[in-house]
Length: 169
Image 1 (cartoon, rainbow, N blue to C red):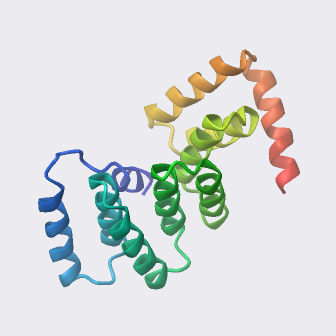
Image 2 (image 1 turned 90 degrees about the vertical axis):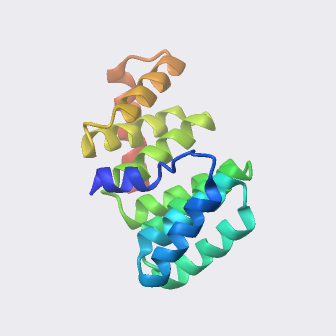
């Protein structure tokens, strides 16, 4: 499941987005309730630079599956593309709250927190992502980069992140 979710959020940068969009729309015609197809379409619109349609599909997705953490992940991607890191962090916190077992949500939240300089909390979420999906090399790469930015030992960083996680509970 973790690999499926990761694959969903890795939109191919083929350059021929219109062909991809048409293909996904055709698949959606046959499977209008398929949440993953809605996510893929929103992300493909976003990758093509069409934020308006990405937002529309995200809205359709929210109506289709309001309980899905995937909505929050899509909203975070849109916020990042709009240069709004605070909104992205908020959406990602929602995704983690909705599905704490999502390695992708934990990873993306850790990544965005690191971007905003919240390193201790970033380490906590990246460590959770690594535990949930130990084969994802990108998580370990990001974790290593965050450790390098903090100049802390792993033990001290984990101690700080555990303290932060207890504060959230």
